[in-house]
Length: 205
Figure 1: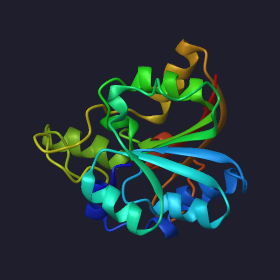
Figure 2: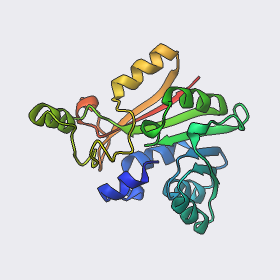
Figure 3: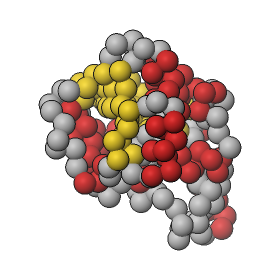
Figure 4: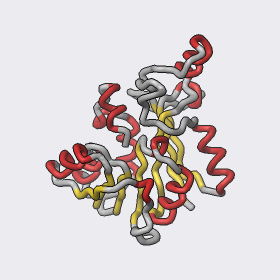
């Protein structure tokens, strides 16, 4: 998860509607792998619900905080691969604001679909109207609440919208089970590709 973005935005994960949506999708006892789990806030919510959750994170500071919360986290970079995980070894694999920061998102998604029965992907919606307006008026890479970094220090390597992800799934013949869109406080149902800051998809092979 892009935990540094969450810090920059001053977001409390417990109060985010997308986090509540994820927690409601997953039942107690199910096995979950959280890729790029950050400081483990989502993992802790799921653990307290009775979910068997583990994470993978490359940031040492984040791992230390996860250990302090008694969370089970492996040190690793998901760009290096997930081949050590068996097929369908998890009920859910979660990529929460992680996929846009990876080098090869398409391959990582395919690997997630191999090891998870379902995959939950959340990413910033880069077609939000504020971003469109900023580019139109300034002619520069935008710096907004959604994208609080400059082009030279951003952790985001790929920029995509909800429609881009739908096109990817159609091309790869990936089934979309659920889709939902959010801003900081609520779910967005009207013109989500324009007004939502976050896009959430639940997919399977």
